[in-house]
Image 1 (cartoon, rainbow, N blue to C red):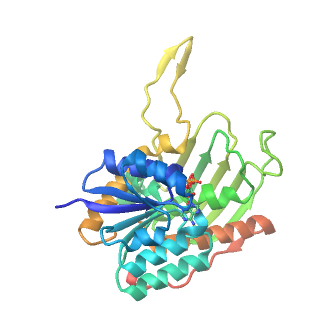
Image 2 (image 1 turned 90 degrees about the vertical axis):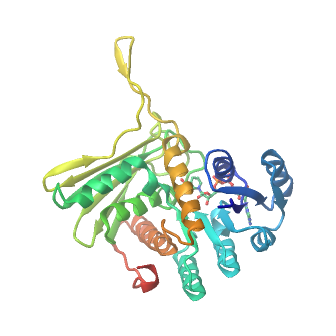
Image 3 (image 1 turned 90 degrees about the horizontal axis):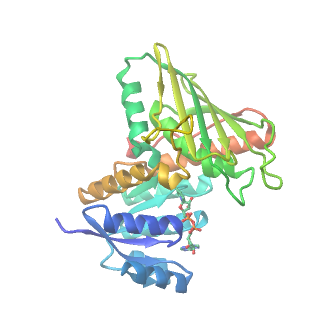
Length: 334
Ligand code: NAI
């Protein structure tokens, strides 16, 4: 089977890592073009990876030789390019968030349904992390009884230019998606509380924060977001079930015994922690597109994620518990 030809929109940090991964590590596809309104920068990336450079991403989406599109532009531009790809009838992988506003996500859902074919996948890569996959298998086995509570944490060593709002919208959006997928249930309520703020928080930033979610069956989730934890990039998830607890495995790193201490390294950032997840995510996306289907997180998952994030943001601003209300799931996504 021939290689699927891909165009990447947005040649910033993650765009470049995806180009490199598809063209050097994965099989069955090749990035042949890129587009970014920052023309000189786009040309330099195109030269580096031997791609054709487009100033206008829509020209690239509509080019005859482009079979699928990857959107890694800044958040506010996702909607425009995803809609253009749907109109062109091309598979589109869009980095999270599908769009910053839930109305825009709903517009994408409606456009996809109107087109009559599932084309959109959202970049919620945690679903591909081998540790989360093991957790899901164990929960789904039912051997440990029903999940009752989840205790989770999402910690970054430090993040500059971060605002109080970004904890939910940029960090916890990953937990919002992966925990819903793990449990196979929608959320009902959201709340965000502020512990004492670290002295390492810049300006007005409230850090850490704790988001509480409840699900339809009453499972209670707490997730800590701490973007100035200083020591490393650390992701935790413990699922307390009726007859046992299940804990997300730590990345496999050698433990050293040195200087009268046991030392096991912790990842420094998300790109290191989730490198396997990104590779698996893209390989499976390529394989599915070539078989004519989408089997990863859908535009509907993108919509549900943004509705939940919006409710959590409201809850944070109002310092109260918010009920989360979704539209009814269209049969198209069953
Ligand atoms: P970045 O700022 O490094 O790159 C963004 C690129 O978008 C820049 O090259 C910029 O010139 C380009 N851009 C701006 N306006 C555009 C437009 N109108 N059309 C096309 N391109 C445009 O940002 P980064 O970190 O690469 O993030 C890109 C996207 O990937 C964001 O949506 C972000 O949320 C997502 N992301 C997802 C991650 C994950 O864990 N799945 C991790 C990091 C980023």
